[in-house]
Figure 1 (cartoon, rainbow over the protein chains, first blue to last red):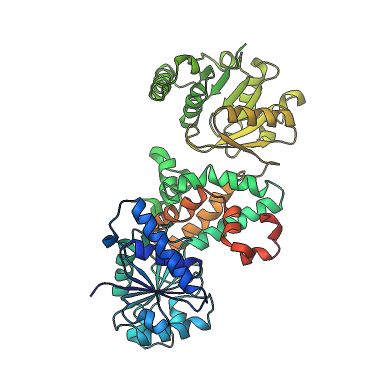
Figure 2 (figure 1 turned 30 degrees about the vertical axis):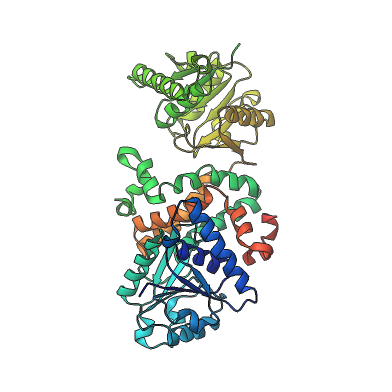
Amino acid sequence: MSFCVAVIGAGTIGRSFAWLFARSGYPVQVFDPRPDLAEVVTELQAEVSADAAAHDMLASELGTISLAESVETAVAGASFVQESGPEDPQAKPKLFAQIAAAAPKDAIFATSSSTIPASLIARHLPPEVAARVIVGHPFNPPHLMPLVEVVPAPATSSDTVERALEFYRSCGREPVALNREVRGFVGNRLQNALMKEAISLVENGVISAPDLDSVMKNSLGLRWSAVGQFEAMHLGGGRQRHPRFHGPHRDLVR
Amino acid sequence: MSFCVAVIGAGTIGRSFAWLFARSGYPVQVFDPRPDLAEVVTELQAEVSADAAAHDMLASELGTISLAESVETAVAGASFVQESGPEDPQAKPKLFAQIAAAAPKDAIFATSSSTIPASLIARHLPPEVAARVIVGHPFNPPHLMPLVEVVPAPATSSDTVERALEFYRSCGREPVALNREVRGFVGNRLQNALMKEAISLVENGVISAPDLDSVMKNSLGLRWSAVGQFEAMHLGGGRQRHPRFHGPHRDLVR
């Protein structure tokens, strides 16, 4: 049986994930209560086919995107479920119970949530189900941005972490597993720390918002698109490395 | 008379600036007390010529890099002086007094310093000289990184700001002028804010340093190389923009 993927939620993130999974060769079942789902699915399939044709891919290398009439039919044959529904801490646990009840017994259940941890989503689920619930948090849009943050709850099995990493890698992503849950995960925590300083600089009249954007694009953004910040610090220090790292943080950049 | 540039200090930053200025067509005089300055200058000139040849440029479109025997001979005919000496708050004011005494009366005096403001460097200089002292802080290496932070002191004239911006733009850079001096300027303040959070995440065991670098490269770095953070927040919010910006910071992203 082929590896099928279910996408629950066809908003900005869900549609982009459906595109990615089909473009990576997986059959994709999409469910969303939106009334225009048929048009959305038709359009997605056309976009995936056009992109694949532009890259000289064979039709057989592509997955197809199908409309599912319900959560249950979407997940019934799925090995991997990517949930991208509303960011509602009341709704997600119920949705995952519904997904788990209809999905195969070894399916992985990933949420795109940026704020709701797997431990909250799975807290009322039986341990054998909770072991397969995990965060797979993308950066928008996931079909273009390589990172997926894979964040296990304490109840998530290491097998689930490995299988989620493997699946995202098979879609050409660069997933990173966090060691444990932390609010905002890693990317948004970094972003928020920087954003706080950015807002302060603009509010205090040091620089305009467009000029601050220009600073970012033409220095740190360009650098960090090629070299992460620890590596950049290390390289920037020459033979003696950066003097700031001769202190308590020295070991971090070894 | 042609527009000549003096580069004072031939360390990592000074050499890269000399390369950039010559590659942009300016005659460059380089001074540094290092004993191997002749070899450094010869090597730089060869690199600039090789790069220009690889881009099918005519020799006449290039500047030449010359060795100066002293600060005074380096700056004697210079319209723009880029100082990249040691980051020493005691030494820089003396060096700039020495530069100003020997340079043309309308030359601009820029420092590459990332920590010493123009107000400190120029505080004992007469007002007509202090008006021409400014920070031109690059990101390493300046011949590749587009940003130059142009930071005026209160005594710096607006004409100096404009001329510095114009000069860096003529070298293909993307300079940004700050409205006023602030410790760390903008780029390094943003970097430090993010770095503090990055170190905290690694020290608290949430993620390894190499994985954190991977998060950065494959999400924020990639994004910020194309779109600054305010613009990204704006675009990310769709029609209603990002909910976080419906609060007190709404005006920043208009």
